[in-house]
Length: 377
Ligand code: NAD
Image (cartoon, rainbow, N blue to C red; front, side, top):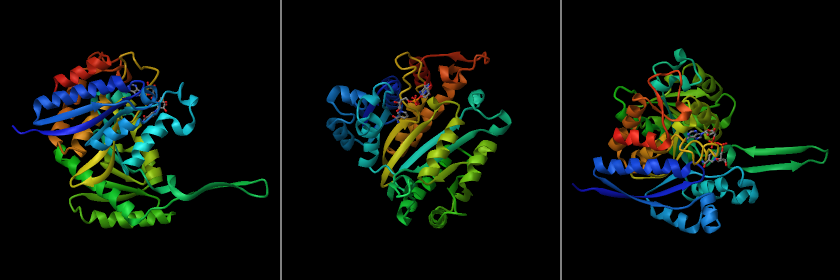
């Protein structure tokens, strides 16, 4: 059987990064055993590991590796005790992660939020509000809007006052490209979940912001190219409320940068633990594939690092997203997703999702959690 080979830059980083990356790589090796695909995985230091190895949070050799790779699988970077010892612009999150986002123009951030029924206890919503289950994809624009628009300043006025200015700017093409990602993702999700009707809910503040008016107009136009995907528009304040009241109504949430920043964290809380939430940051499409950086939503969790206590699922799901969006290996993505479901259904729980009241659940470490997923692939 002919197998295709993909080159992956694996940057584990700091804290729990190396522990959870090890499990994700084990899962990718298990995928090679089941599917006609090979992964040329090359590990390189980033974050404090980069500073210690080469004096820089994103060493030149690491950046060069990323440029030669088909995708970046990223752990997490930063250590609260060490970060303040170097100037702000040299600290790992800024010097490595933000730089990679800029370098590869990763304009689309995708964060799937899934609450498995066995983990209902970990969700902050009461069971009645969880409905038939929570499975939402937040698609956030990542490189424009209020965080990047200029002018951006704090001026000192003559009367003892200061004045701060931020500028919210979006152009048609910036809205179009993120809207396309959302509609394509809705189609892709419908393929792997029988019976799911693809829907995009586009978030704006069209009642008071000119940006919202343009956003709504452009998203509606893009939507016409995807007649199989339902489109609805919702104001951001109502969305914040609806996520708490009836999250099961959402499929794909399409957001500009700041609204997505806030709503994606609100939505992530519904999954019960940061250890369950992956993310993909995508750049320009190459045909039907995207170059992307894939990482867990959480950070380096120094409180549990090196103790075999981290939940590897967010990192493993990040690897699964890489298969889906960068390599178009939808079946392999689904196999990982199902294996995680099986491992959870069998009662395996890392500490963050363990419920002592559940007699069918057993607390396991990072390695054992990874092993239970591999066994189910
Ligand atoms: P954190 O996400 O590392 O931890 C918050 C809480 O969630 C902790 O109690 C931690 O134990 C728990 N947690 C996170 N991931 C988990 C997992 N996989 N399994 C089980 N529990 C998990 O956030 P923080 O403590 O605010 O930040 C720690 C460091 O990480 C800081 O230096 C911060 O700058 C950095 N950080 C990096 C990234 C990134 O690399 N993208 C993102 C966020 C924070």
